[in-house]
Image (tube, rainbow over all chains, first blue to last red; front, side, top):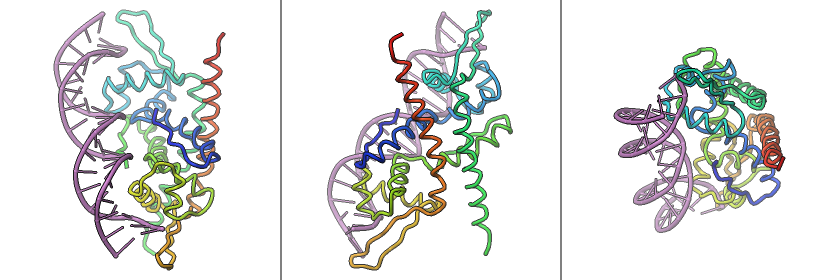
Length: 121
Length: 121
DNA sequence: CAGTATCCCTCGGGATACTG
DNA sequence: CAGTATCCCGAGGGATACTG
């Protein structure tokens, strides 16, 4: 997605590349919401659009397509009339959960820190 | 930094906000490189500019300022002539390491997966 | 050395209208 | 319902020149 600018130190690069890979997969304004929404259960397109507040059909479609390409999300077409489409997380998608939890915990700690530090001496 | 769009489900929001907080701190094109570079040791401004390949003084300055505001990086002015400025990670900055490691591990796994999947049947 | 000030451009994403 | 096609805008970031 985003281009990986090289660092002069090759040791750094070995660490940076996979971190970038991971972050790129969460990149974009809506991917996180979509993943979290799907963590709570399978959803249909319109259903997601209602749940992910403010997203347009265009963006939902684009982001889902990227997530599908990365094998995090599975798209299933049900042969009803009119067709309904169901989106679900793959096992691989669920494997992101620990990463999200690590981010969440750090974020919570950070928020606490900011609040504490703002208090009067 | 980026605006947190609310999700209709308040349960989701509680998880999302801290994750966004964490990701926002790593946001921007260069922050990750800068942090990794500082993980390897304290650096002066020009030294960092040489190490973080391709960054301009403008961007290095901006990103360091943000990192400093978030208490991840400490700026120390040494009273030499001309002045030299030393940047270092705070303990708090170092507390990001487990998060980065979680991202790195997932990224490595992902890369392996992509390669495997591309092989002929 | 350690930055700031200007100008410029790309591109992610919004709004809206349309389709099978 | 489940999307696609167009048009458009602003913020993030590059290049370059300048300063204490």
